[in-house]
Length: 225
Image 1 (cartoon, rainbow, N blue to C red):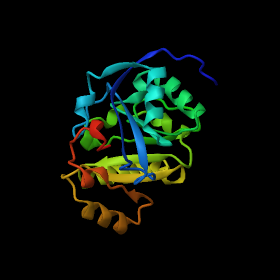
Image 2 (tube, one colour):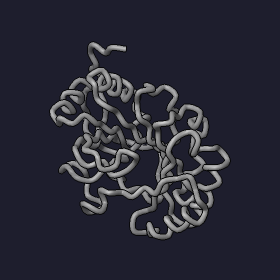
Image 3 (tube, rainbow, N blue to C red):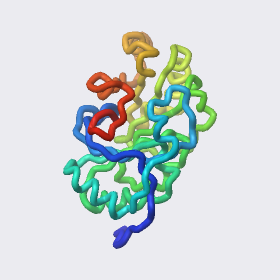
């Protein structure tokens, strides 16, 4: 689909370039578009500033701004980007320009309408997030082998819950499964030991950006996620 003119107005929290901190693309230079607004309130959220506010920008202007960043990889994140309908026009416009597109979504919104060329990183909220009841499990049917599922863990109880989800839904057979920890709350060492103990078919996911820059620094100055 070709979008000839895209004047729809979006609400964007920030646009910046940084090193991709997570996922199977970790370590790659990337442009980030952080959409403002989120329908969840996770207990450990590190981007609460994106809940509200933001600035209005047209799709066309946003595409031009991404062009000016000069990087071939673009991640669309939030907040929760899929609560703004215009996100699909942004994705289509960027794909038509030849960009590789990632989207990080919180798992509560349907992903079936996403262009199949988009690399999806979908969170599954654990009980420790206080939002596990908000998950849209039908999304599992739309996942592709190159996509990622991410669990952010607050405790070993969250780990046990995630382990059950992985096996109950055969998530490891659908795509790459990532296990992460709440920064400064659960040690990577413990998670690594649990994965080894259980021979779990999942990948330890370390937030690289939080080891390079202050963990709660906004990304607008070119740092963070």
